[in-house]
Image (cartoon, rainbow, N blue to C red; front, side):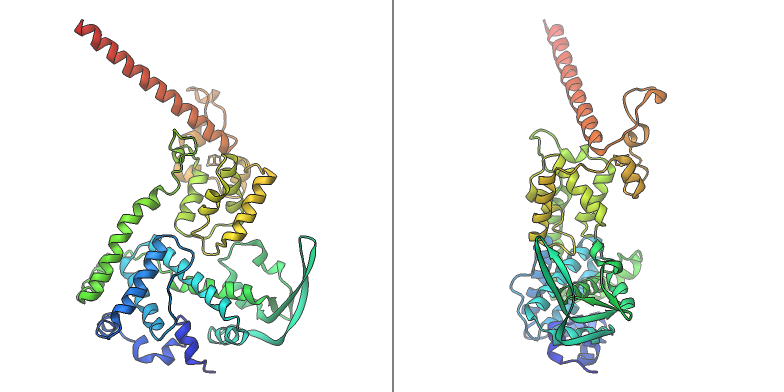
Length: 404
Ligand code: SF4
């Protein structure tokens, strides 16, 4: 069944792009680039792509000024070529997250069940479509019972394929009503699964094959306009990259670079978030409770999640503020070890591996809690600072004596 061309224009990541735009979809990247930049609207295409990169580097949650027109298809293909050419995991994740979030917003704004149905068909998802929507359950929201209605049920295998990378507990099959092999799913949750499909479609692994990347770059960079765009993106990335490296170096004490006081289990989660990778449920809870225990303001904790593919600012603010009110205590080391979040081996961290309290190994105490790690590191830092100050004072006094 053929889907409307207009839908491909809005959603060029659909498989039917190849059918509707076979003249461009099958071209070699270098041919496509030559064609694009010989078009009268090449400036506009280039500008749209640049805005997407800039928005991703600035960690925006949506793409501003994205016009719906005939250029969307060209923008999408050019974007993918650039992602490959830049060959950088951080950039790829950011672009994939932002672009797929934008797809979700578009589907939500469309609010069209028939379009959603066409999208499912094109993705070869086996769905049952109900028009009018059917009621499939009730959900308790605070004190209100909310009727759950939907236009869709999706075959469980297709559901599992799409949801396999999503970490929220409520997306687990066991938490969703299933009948005759079909999972009832609310329209917005189906959109969220499609968002994930788009995200995965853009994500490509960094290539290790430097020789083929080099020859690819030599070929595509022959086009002057493409080269300028590539260099412009590279240059803003180089400037912003430094900021990313320091995003989590938030000085909450006014004196210390707090990041170097964090244990490996925390650093690992912050790094994953920074790279725009999904976090499992326990990682999310742990990092929230850990940062709140250190008196991080709610909005700073929320910002940690802003790079994640399923980030919803309003929902996250509510959840973090709730955790703060409840004063949850972060997991201790034994719990983190049992859920595979302890990273002492990976980081070969001395304090985590060897303990503390004495130079004599048999007298050392075992580290039991990540917050203890912070306190011990802080204590050691202060001692070191004091030692260095005293040493500097002694050196100064000695040189003064010698001069007398
Ligand atoms: S030993 Fe504790 S503090 Fe260190 S990485 Fe493991 S869980 Fe974190």
